[in-house]
Image 1 (spheres, rainbow, N blue to C red):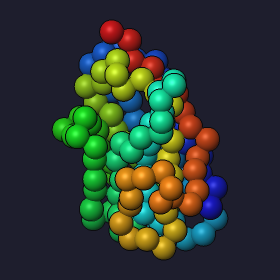
Image 2: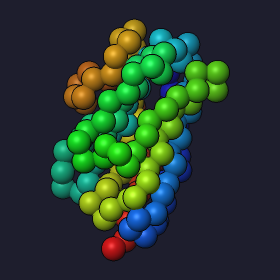
Image 3: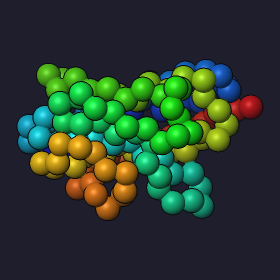
Image 4: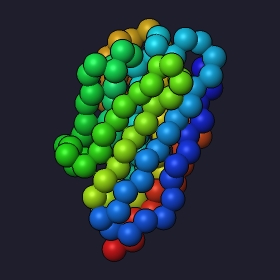
Length: 124
């Protein structure tokens, strides 16, 4: 599967952005999906994940209550709605797909495919 992420940008603290990740290739519902971010000089970290049917979602503690992951299997797209953004959310955001696993993982090595990343910059 090929993943194309978009929607990043520059926003002031407290603002919102919506990231999208469009998939092409195999049946999208065969993948659980995740969003990760990577700040300069740091490792890539799990942000949010969603099961292949969309019924279960998972978040890292720092984004709970602010970010929402969702998916539309008819459109082969996963989304990350980011509200109340903070400067510490600044990073490159990547979407990732985990093939034939109904539940997303929280580790980079659990994913089979990655998008190219989209930059999110939050100013204070």
